[in-house]
Image (cartoon, rainbow, N blue to C red):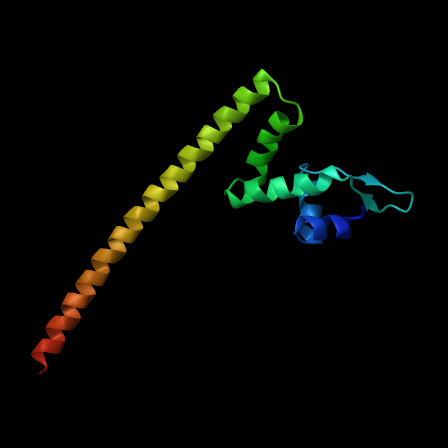
Length: 124
């Protein structure tokens, strides 16, 4: 199938498909006229890539995990498990930082409300 059909069936833009191919995450063949051609498996591959991106993984991380998908082995599985654990730890750190930021904002909101309530009460 051609790139537009793949994109449509996978629910992504043609630009995304080209990006995945540029990153080495998706493979196509070329027709005699130079058009990209994809197999039926390409639709599921793109949907899978989308799920990984939605989970917050970068192209580099996805590329590191794909050998486990494409050629399962004990070594690939060990590498993938280690990489996924690193990503989990990175996301956990981001969550902790967001929680600290939320707590700081809550404190600022409380201070601003107290100030407003005090100023408003004094002016009446």
